[in-house]
Length: 64
Image 1 (spheres, rainbow, N blue to C red):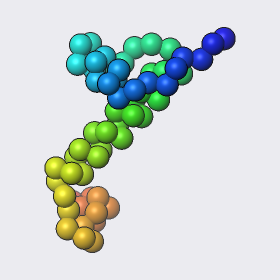
Image 2: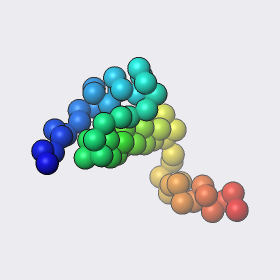
Image 3: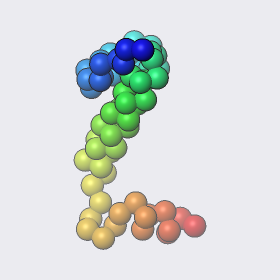
Image 4: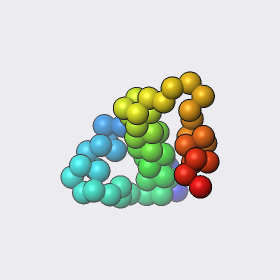
């Protein structure tokens, strides 16, 4: 069985924007999903910059 080539972020964006989902072989979809999650996490962190000492764990502990 031949493995799929690794996805680029551009390919991931194209699939998500046209289909709303990632489709393809598992050895392509899972790395594409991880790439998309990493990108989204980075953008969220840039958008909602927390002051030092106010990480995600401190936010979740305050809400419980």
